[in-house]
Length: 203
Image (cartoon, rainbow, N blue to C red; front, side):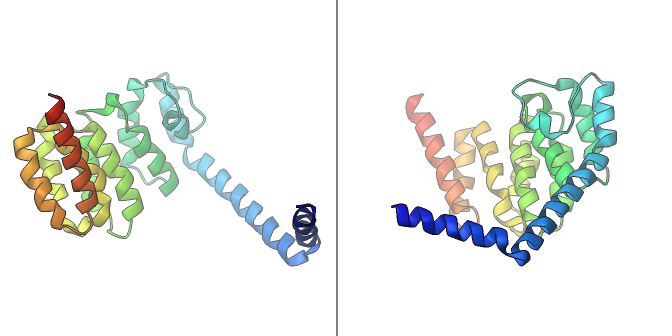
């Protein structure tokens, strides 16, 4: 055990003495600081607009990480989602909309953005899908069901299937069963089918 610890310590000492490693580490730290400064500048108007409605944050990510509610922030977040923000800021805005206070308010704008995004942005589209699933109310379910059927969006549609838990089980089950043949959604479809079946048994 002592020999293994010594070996690890020797390795770390070698890294500290390695000029190439230290140069790469310094470059990585520099890029991290530059990105932090860029994001702070990018969020400046968003933070100011949130403050104007009484929501005091240093970053939109403070909303993502809080357990407090922030209904006054929702219109501001939706407005800034239309703006040309950095991708990281845009993701923070979207995650901040995964809240009950955005239900019935944010869904259609989120659906439009999901449809307009390049298919290569699949990671961000998955975050959008989570926000859509959280905010969808009965009046927007048809649009979300249409989105689920658009295979070009790939596995990013996965979170949308949670919306089917909000509709009549007899209507949801045939669609979920058909999605078992969709290679990107079959696991999600099976999971929701199990959840629906469990709900039916309990009731």
